[in-house]
Image (cartoon, rainbow, N blue to C red):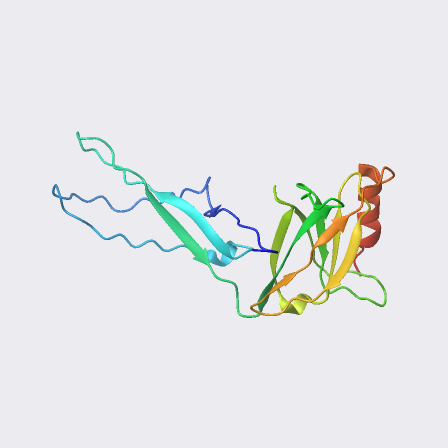
Length: 192
């Protein structure tokens, strides 16, 4: 689909995606099944989406170890959040992987000042980016930049429960070195 990028599930928060909790020891008969309830606190997650991990049962059985069980936490966005998403392409329409997408929240169009929070993202291998934010962060100033291309700035608004697509096509430029791109971002992402 146009304007959408598939993203693999992320790891559950914690030590390399593993939940390290010890359950009370118990003994089960061969062939017996047991239900296990897992509770995970999603309040530490900054973005909604699928987070994956494994449940590993340790055993002293002489017949081998139990296979890990895949678990997925599906974190849903709060009702007031919307998603800004898009792609960064070059002049030929090819995706620019690793491009910087800087998002300034609560952008003041009169003064050019950012609000208290800015986000810096890198595009994926397909030139895509996405970020969920509360609609209270409107308006957004979004800058796409990459070494060897002229940066572009756009203003956008997110809407609760919806995706807002902001795509960029960057023109090649030999004058925009990495140092100049960084200087451009610093000059345009200043806080109030």
